[in-house]
Image 1 (cartoon, helix red, strand yellow):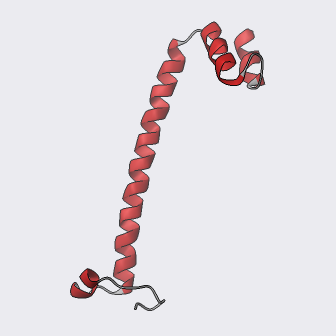
Image 2 (tube, one colour):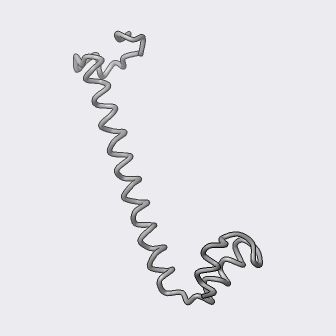
Image 3 (cartoon, helix red, strand yellow):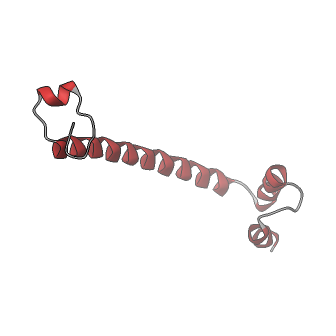
Length: 83
């Protein structure tokens, strides 16, 4: 057991890592996952913006109607598109 009651795996014991080193290693892994997720989301956002840029106002209104229902929701966007 480590300082705060967490279990230490055999591989960490074999490497003689302290609990602080183990935490840093885990945080590094989590950070890299977060960075990967952020990159994936940024790519999705870029693709959605490009797709939206190619649609006309009428096409965007039709898409909103299909997703939300005729005249339902997205009032500000609908007002902007109708002008």
